[in-house]
Image 1 (spheres, rainbow, N blue to C red):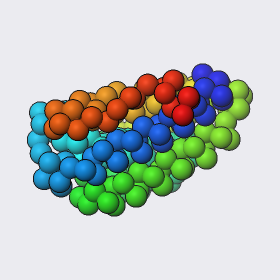
Image 2 (cartoon, rainbow, N blue to C red):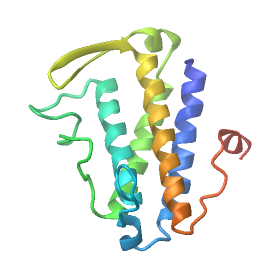
Image 3 (cartoon, rainbow, N blue to C red):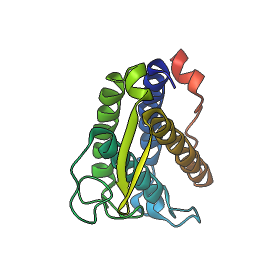
Image 4 (cartoon, rainbow, N blue to C red):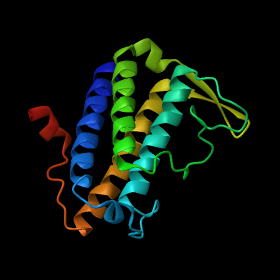
Length: 170
């Protein structure tokens, strides 16, 4: 992964989140939270998980100090924890986190991407090249946004084109 690719992926992440949240806003809260058989059950649950996971990774990238038992900053303790029951709050916090991702990615160089990321998970020390973790974060986002796209389509709401090249042409 190069710094340029990471910047493109950060832009794509924000672009797609803006698109999906705009479509999700047209659903009622009941529709957004309806169990549709997805891994995180609902549109809201999957969007929540994406925000949670991004915050965990950003905490690792930035060296956030965690309290005992926390996986990520802000009291994150499990991957299925609901951060915000309110869709408006979830959307507002998603936008803030996307801004933080874009700002962090803008600081990366070839050297920092090749360097080590050290973090603790469940008390075990982990180390991998930073670019592996950045690539994982973007891949994870794409995976779960694909699930949200399917859930929205099942609810009768088409999010439109989701291709990276569409964002690059916009």
